[in-house]
Image 1 (cartoon, helix red, strand yellow):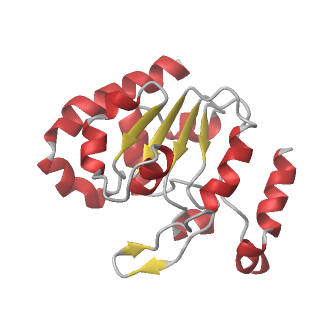
Image 2: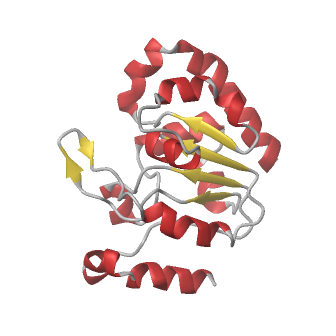
Length: 191
């Protein structure tokens, strides 16, 4: 079934320009996965190397979870379903946002194939607002501060980009309270 979904994504008219350019959708959905990570969309580097979270943001995310690069990429504990499976392009202040209805169309089909998901990490505002059905005006800082309200199913997070160092310095509770609990939750599941 996974192969059929992959081919359907590639052949979807909305993805035609990517398929014609030889770009395949980038996600990983092992049926054994226990933790799902939903982020924005692959960056250019991830798309070019065919390896998601292959940048300083990925290094930070793995450190936040307390897992090694090997555990992250070589175990089947982690699934990665970005809000869009293709690099959306560059904007004025970073990558463009994921396409609006992409996740709504493809995530449910892939989630059906992963019955062992115990925890979904929602990385950034796009994933958080989509999965938690929040209004566009919801402040990610408030949602992350109130992360306990969404456990045990969801764990909302800010994006682990090095650009968020200033945000972290203004919100010391994140490193002090949220990250230790994230590590604890992750290791309760994978250990």
